[in-house]
Amino acid sequence: MIHARGLTRRFKIKGAHVDAVRGLDLDVEEGQLVAFLGPNGAGKSTCLRMFTSLLPPTSGTAVVAGRDVVSDPAGVRARIGYVGQKSGAGENFRVRDELVTQGRCYGLTRPQARERADEVLAMLDLGSLAERKPGTLSGGQRRRLDIALGLVHRPRLLFLDEPSTGLDPQSRANIWEHILRLREEHGTTVFLTTHYLEEADNMAARVVIVDHGRVIADGAAGRLKSDLAGDRVTITTRDAADAARAAGIAERVAGSGEVTADGTTVLLRVSHAGAVLPEYLRSLDEAGVKVLTAETSRPTLDDVFLALTGRSLRESDAQGDAQGGEQGGEQGGEQGASRDAAA
Ligand SMILES: Nc1ncnc2c1ncn2[C@@H]1O[C@H](COP(=O)(O)OP(=O)(O)O)[C@@H](O)[C@H]1O
Ligand SMILES: [Mg+2]
Image (cartoon, rainbow, N blue to C red; front, side):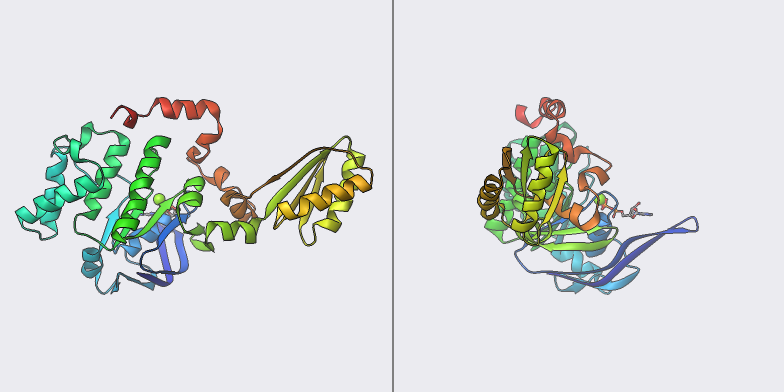
């Protein structure tokens, strides 16, 4: 469905230049759901705009839905759906009329366009809002309308740029439900960008991580985490001397894993924490090291990003809203702002 080779885009601004995308190679097969993940400015939107023929590449090639983006942009556009980072709906027409107009733009007759509008309204649970104007919809409802607009011409491949960004957690979950359903019920190939790590982790079968215009990791989230980040075993001891001894013992049991000691805490990075912990505790006990607490934790996609770049994706994300869920106050605020809940 998507085959890109050496795809590059350079922007020139006042004598300087920005290499937004640098030599991207990518293959996406039919039916896949791919999350394109990376910090702000990584080049995600630029890639999407090249895949959708909206922006010509500086060099390299992309064949999307069987058509070359440079030599046959009209062919690409007829076969794909694209929902940009900003809303595509106008303010003046009612929801159903927006969809009918879109259908007419794709060459449907008026009766066909009406029929299709009702189909996509049903698909995205917008039926009860058909007579409303887009300006009166909540953030989540509006994003569903954007997706509906991208689906009018029955594309086999759908590009979504940050479909859930800026929505409250409840609306985000609802958008995801619809995206997953599209794939299950209609076999639509979905390629979407997000900077919400948890979403990419839970929802997408394949995660492609980009940084500075390059792909730095590509695969199933679980696989990336075990290959690139590993599980963690953390123990705490009574004092630093015990921690130092515990770290020495950890070097033996952790195999090729990484061991760090900090104060009274010892951290091991291993591929399977559950297999290492019992033996480690036994060895510590035999050596007379008293362990106060012991816990294991699974890595996150942020650990993968950290392992690859030395930076945290959360920190390098200027919008900072990827961290919303971690701060009680902020999350409360987000839920308080939920407008979808009232609908
Ligand atoms: N039209 C443009 N002109 C100049 N620079 C641009 C333009 N569009 C994007 N860029 C730059 O390209 C880089 C990648 O941007 P973008 O693809 O929007 O990233 P992302 O979607 O991952 O946040 C950024 O440094 C951005 O400032
Ligand atoms: Mg973007």
